[in-house]
Image 1 (tube, rainbow, N blue to C red):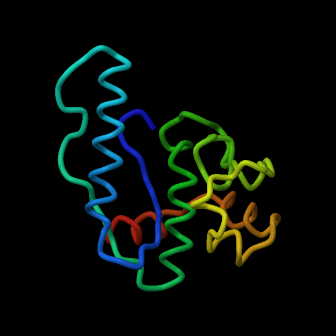
Image 2: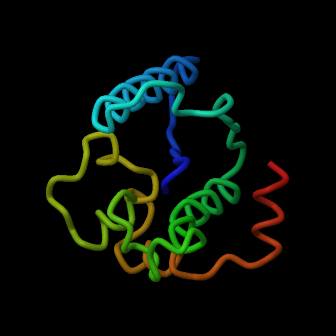
Image 3: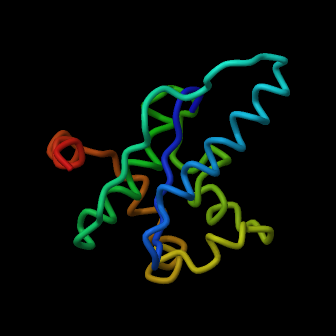
Length: 132
């Protein structure tokens, strides 16, 4: 994505704001130095949602994986290199440490993950996700 990112994570403490502030600050510093610019990079505050059931969790997985398609960056789910599915489908050995114990990876076999995430989102699912 060129103007936002999605991250789905589990935390055992109430440190989500500190985490997102650190990520956003460090990336803004990196980006501004790389492009020789100054000024704000992000507009507004991050949004966060509690996941209260597995149905919503799996729909979020699917929404995040489909976002590069919606943005017309890639044509196939799993092709975008910055997603868990890309790492799983391509059997990367260098999976980032925070994704090694992904609930998605632990609960589904390779084909199951692919089937779950490659199914297109329907309008009912999109409405459900937007209401959260």
